[in-house]
Each structure stands twice: as C-alpha cells, then as structure tokens.
Image 1 (cartoon, helix red, strand yellow):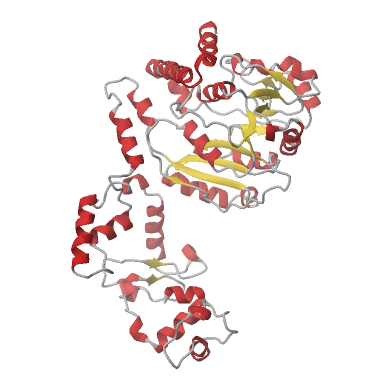
Image 2 (cartoon, helix red, strand yellow; image 1 turned 60 degrees about the horizontal axis):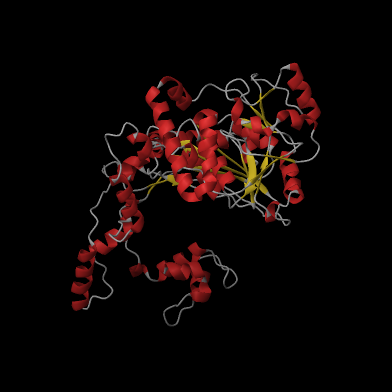
Length: 494
C-alpha cells in the first residue's frame, strides 16, 4: 500500500472491478490520472477496504492545533506515544496545554544525545543469528524475521566482524591508563556524534572548476563571527561547530533569527557534538574539509575576516598558478588588530597605511613571530607578483590548496601544534608555498580560549604537547624517511 501510494495510480494494483481513478473520483478530489495527491489514494483505498487498516488508540497520535480537543484523549492516559503538532503554527498553536508539551519537546531537543548511545538492547552473536535462521528455515517460516535479527536492524548492533570496531578496541587496548598523557592519547580515538548539513545547503558547481570553499571550525563562543565572515566571503563555506545538544538548539535559533545567515544557502554547518575534555580542533577541521564540494579549499580560522573580494581573487590565482596541475599551497598573509571596532581596509594600500600607523600588526608578531615569519612581510609590502617561500620550523600560514590535500593529525587537540604539524606534512609531500601579493586576512580580538589558558597554566599539558610533537616527528621519519630528517634538525636548532 505504501509503495503504491508513493508510485501513484499508475503502479496501483486494484482489486477486480474498481480502478484507482474510480476510487479517487468517488472518495477524493478528481484529478488527471497520475496526478492524485498521495493522501487521496490512501483515502480512497481505506474507504473502500477498511479491513486494511488497524486503528490505533488516540494516544499514538495526539494532535495539537488551535481547535483540537486533545485532552479528551490523554486525560485518562499517562503513557502518551506521539505528540503531533498538526498545524502550520507548530509550537505556536493556541492550545490550553501547549506550554506543557512545548517544554517537554524542547527539553528532549536539548537532552544530551550521548546518553542515548549506551547499548539499550544486547546484540546477539553471529552464532545466535545463524541458529535462528536455521530454526526458522526448518519450520518453513521463510518470511518470518527472528526477534534477534530485527533487533540488529533497528538498533544498529554491530557484528563481531565489524572491522572498524575491532580496530578501535585494539587501539584503545594499547593505551596505558597510567600514562600521564593518557587523556590526550584517548581523545584521538573518540567517536563523536556528528550531524552533517544541520541547516539547508545548496551549491551549484562553478563551470570553470576554480571554485574555492572557506573552511573553518568554531565553538559557541565564536558564533558572533559568522555574520561578519558571510559579509566578507560570498563563496561557499564549510563549517564544523563543536556544540552540546543544548547549544545546537541555541545555534539553530540564532541562525533562524539572522537575516544574513538565512539569506545564504551555500554555507554548510556540520555539528560535532561535545564529548571529552579537549577541544578536538583537528577533527573539526577534517570534518569541514571532508564535506567540501569545490576543487579548492581556503583553510582559515573562525577569528579571521578575509579581505573584501578575496573569494574572486583566489579563483583567479588558482588559474594563474595552475593549482589544478601542481602541488602548491597559496599563502594568504595574516594580520591582526587589537581593536574590537575596526574600519576594515578595502585595499592593500590602506592596509599598509594602517600597519604604519600601528592600527594593524602582522599576526602574532609579539607572541609567536616564528609562526608567520617565513611569509616575509617586508617583501610582501612591495610585491606585485606571487613569490615562493621555504618551509621553516613552526611555520603555520593559512593556505589555499586542492581538495585532495592531507588531513590534519588528530593527535593534536586543544591548543598547540595543530596547524604546524599540517604544514610540515604538506612540505614533506613537496607542496610549494607561494605567497599571494594582493591577498590578506585580519584576525579579530577575542577572549583567550579555555585550551590556551590550560596550556599556559598547566605544566603537564605542555609536557604532553611536547611528547606528542616528538611522536609526530618520529612518525614523519617513518613515513618520509631521510627527507624528514630536516624537521628534527630544524626543531633542535629553533
């Protein structure tokens, strides 16, 4: 019946003597053959053949609208099954009990979904399933599904042959719980709940294959940057948001109340739900990167505003530098302001003037010069054509690359070395770093993150980060051999 309703009258197999169209004409609005609404087909068939329907008690579908008398259903029942907001007004219907049900609904939306991940029903072993199949086949019940089999389908119980599950368990068993850096190592294997494309998303691929997606990640405390970024960047955006279930609902209300965000359908919001004590920065970047639909990506951060026109400039640079056929990473020079209210420079000349006046600075010039020193800002001031720079220790520029570039290393969580390790990997894979002469981005001020506060105040945090760095460099040596020795040498000399 469901199949036929979906397929329309053309696929409906009626009992002898009565056609689908006759049923619709008699019991529902008459329309041309094949154009009947699905409910008309259902109504016609049910009216003629009531035996097809099993009537459920009303508490399986308590309808709330302005004029329903739903209390007649639930006044004697405590175990309601389904609340149906049967009105275009949805949660705003004028029903005397609507406040109670609305609060119940909103409470469930904000409920910690991780609490629902526990194994509610035991998963049968493979031997149990085979035994059930044999028993039913012997009885000739070929169409009957065993309770165990049905349970496996409904609740997603993994089989013992689930390779991913086995690998995860093996990796976890190799960790030492007495290791002072155990929590850091454990975070790498955490499987986070993820809701891809949380809001409506549409994207039409550019015909010239030069399109660039801005990639970034954020938590709730950076939500205010979204509107500004959308005003500066008209191209597609892929964002990974690290939120709790309650924060996801707050974000939804924020987005729906923003004309700027609601006017943009080429921004993909991917929710990664909170779990564990660290901010999984590189996992978030990987989630956002994985769902990029353009040939190229601008790997940015949420605290940066790109210059006006950067989107079109990058598309032209992609062609100019032949990114499609070469392993290049185009560098967008990074600057910063310490002012919360900034008259954003509309040209390179205006930016240079603000640099000279002390309104802008090269990014992290006063705390981490090495991070962007190889960009060579002195050369950039007068450059009119792209120029190549070499990798140096602790280099972490913001780059535009092809979509097939390596992922970020998940071992780095919270603060420290998350971008440095990625740039090192690009260099090991022989990417050429090219600085764009007429591109720039500006970092906006914000309160220190929780993770950088922990890094500064917790000695063990810094010790573990150093350990993870050393292990990453050892892994690089194993993967890239002799070519990776320069990273150890550079680290020792820095």
